[in-house]
Length: 317
Ligand code: NAD
Ligand code: UDP
Image 1 (cartoon, protein in one colour):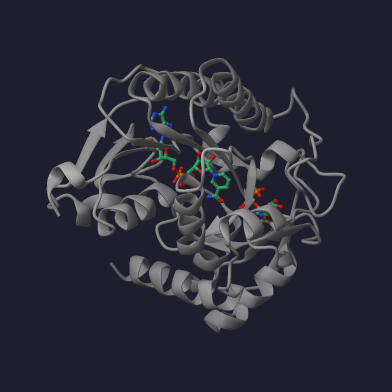
Image 2 (cartoon, protein in one colour; image 1 turned 30 degrees about the vertical axis):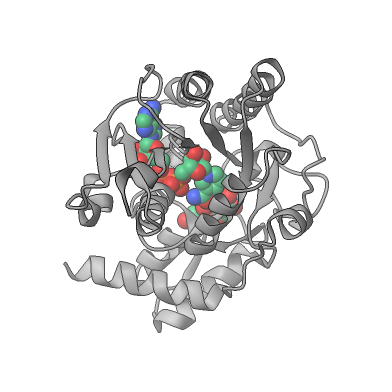
């Protein structure tokens, strides 16, 4: 394909877990991909296999600073996503969400690029409506330890819609529910990576609380497919659109599955429940089904198998 036929796509946070899979998929589809990252939680290793492709560019840059590049599409993923990482420097997390959104929306305005925001199910907080629909306004603590992330992401959504109303920018807001798969950061404390690593190393499996809280887990390839379908949808679809797998599990069930699938001798032990930990979470994906013809098909066991193989290989390196 001639270069001038290729779209120029910017992915902020492109060296992270979701971003690296998105870079790979968009490159494979014949696009020019610019991956921007400050390497806070992402690594060059996540995109090492893409560096020889001359349609791929890697830029070390922080989204709190403006950036001038010519692009057709922007996927704004830059933001630490795991509680350990986003609480490490909470003020920086809020800055990343808000100033990152302002800078990327400014870039979209100048270049007339389409822009997708990686928002989150955390905008629903500890939800009192179940499953969560896009029309639910949420139950978020504005002053707790999770607020830097939750309120930063809520304000970013506000900015997206104000730029849309004020400047008619083509926006897309995806509300992403828990996603897992290869290249999750091994030390970010998220439940799937924690349990798999603990099971593979014969360590205790740390259930926070009694493990009765629920989450719904989506495999990374399907999430990336959802992003691309949303970006390619008509300009009338701004979102927010929930993206996630509606199959809901208790955290205890997840632990038991991981132990069984790894054949581990690890024991389940209960640890204190983190502050403001949501008790239940399940996306209503009616909108994504209707407007994007998207729904996950990969069952938890299948996705876990691939993720276990990834971490097993990592431990043997
Ligand atoms: P991740 O931590 O692996 O990736 C985030 C990336 O952003 C990293 O590469 C990090 O270095 C980069 N980054 C952070 N701050 C930056 C800054 N100021 N400037 C430039 N780069 C910066 O997390 P992920 O799971 O890949 O999440 C990607 C996006 O999706 C995040 O915005 C997150 O909020 C959102 N999200 C993820 C999930 C999930 O389950 N993985 C759920 C909801 C929302
Ligand atoms: N969790 C757990 N043990 C762990 C890590 C997480 O029981 O070692 C729980 C956590 O308290 C939460 C759920 O698993 O209820 C999902 O946690 P994660 O940090 O992966 O995502 P989030 O809370 O942001 O959905």
